[in-house]
Length: 213
Image (tube, rainbow, N blue to C red; front, side):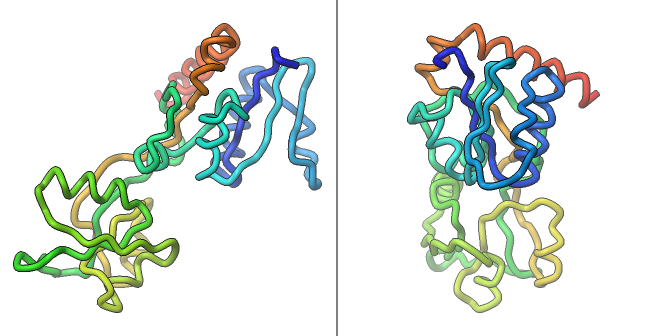
C-alpha cells in the first residue's frame, strides 16, 4: 500500500473541480463519487487513495505526512506557513486578499489602525512592511460587519467578486496578493515517492496549461 499516492482534497466546489482534473489525467477513483459516509476512497488500479478534508486542514495532513499531496489555497500557505513543498498553481479558485472598508473612509494617521481579519499573519506582514502600527481584531466569520459597527477601521479578507462588500457599503482599498489553489507535497513523500508525484505533477501542469490558453 506504500506505493499508493495519498491525496487530500478540500471539501466543496474547489475540491470537486480538482478531483475532476485528476480524474481526467488518469487518477480517477469512481468510489469517491458514490456519496455516503465513507471517509477514505481507494482505487487499486490507479494506485490512489483520496480523502476529503476541511480546506484549512489540508496543509496539516500534508505537512504531517497523512497525505502525500494535497490542494490548498495560497491564503492558507501565507497565513500558516506549513512546512510543505508548493509544486504548482492550479489556476482554480482565483480571488484576492484585500484591505477593505467603508466607502470614502480616510484612514486615521494619529492612532493605531484597527484591522479585523481571520488572516492575522498576512495582515501583520503586510502592514509591517509599511511600518504601520495596527491592532489585530481576530474574527472567524462575518468580517464585513466589523467596520459597520465601528469595531475596526478596515478588514483584511478574501475578495472574489466584491458583491458582499458592495451590499454592505464597503469597498476594497488595496490588494495584498492574488490567491488561487496550489498543489502541495509532503517533503518526505516527495523524496521517497518522487517518481509518482512528478508524474502526476507533469500531467497536471500539462492539463492546466492546455485549459488556460
